[in-house]
Image 1 (cartoon, rainbow, N blue to C red):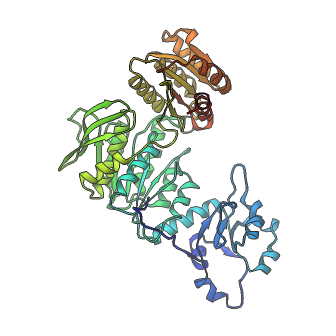
Image 2: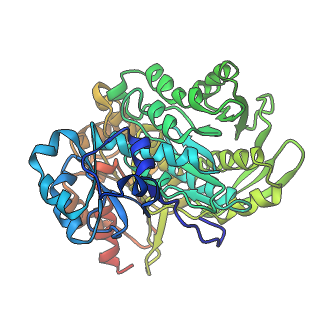
Image 3: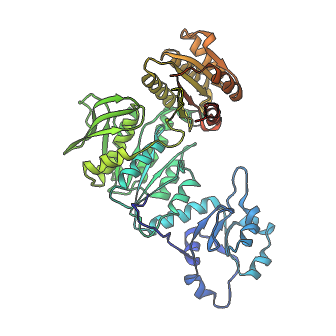
Length: 491
């Protein structure tokens, strides 16, 4: 998002690359090398050997599947003149050939870490402010809402999709251009310390924590550990900055007590109708309307009606987070309203398709954990009205020893929420089914199997007017079921 303004990424000199990475230049360019060190410029940084411009620097990242070092010759054939490689690969690569070609080759201890160093350097030298969002649920949606809101007044850069890890966040910040005023980024995690490291890269002026739930509890071991991990963001907010916190989540609210010690202000928001909750930003008179929600956004000095054109009461909380950031930035209530109402669902997040026979398919396949799965089921119950609701559930990953209990609970929630048919795929499909049966759901209305088997059965069981919710963790690729059903109905 750039408010229609064209932004040009800030170029890189060789000296800046060396300063950012602490790397070693393996050979000189030419006799006038010292002049070139500070004047020769690259247009940007890339890790994609297939989508790289000839005047960019290629960083050879080692991934789970591919090693960028294996593609260095490919990028050089495309005219690339700059490489950043791991020091321990020097002996495997044609250094002499590269030196003869006049390639700028910088060796570092860890290319992934160096990508983060480059991004941190770029963030510091730019004249932008940063809003960073984390939480167990709603990070990407909230990030998109915040970006829509901030862009009402400021030229805004935001991360694509959920570019929220040690690769995605740096790539976002490396896109900062000469016109950007704000960057809105998302911070994800799998292990303790990751939020802190990402926060050190982006140095947020505003930090948002949406909620703290059991996502990744299998890795972190306890809710307290998850709370502490999310709280790492608060320690890295710039002094004088603001923490935007969800007062309706007790763990998030408790983290607010730490902010004063970090020199950080706090701003709480609340969707609770309990007016005893002290929150300057509130949602009042919340009312569902079809696939949208109306509410009154109450700010400290003014109020404004909001119409969210996306299903799910839980979306109101995400909208309040965006409103809070807008308020911190000094936006008017009308600007905040315009930003929030301009938001449209991210693909795979409460994305609704309607067939010619009146069947509604809710694609919420982007990810899942116990809290977001429960919220999605409640939304299905609300949307279907008097029609049948069908749940297609995939495994929720990274729950560790809690996986069995939490999957059984989802089956129970589904059975208690008037779900007419339940389909379950994955390792814990039978556990979900057991939970549903324990709650009294008829076994004849429960189907477990592979994704292809589910598509085959589901497409014959659907009736006109049905609402079908498909959801599961990213690694389950439940979008394949959405695709199969849409192809069957030609939507």
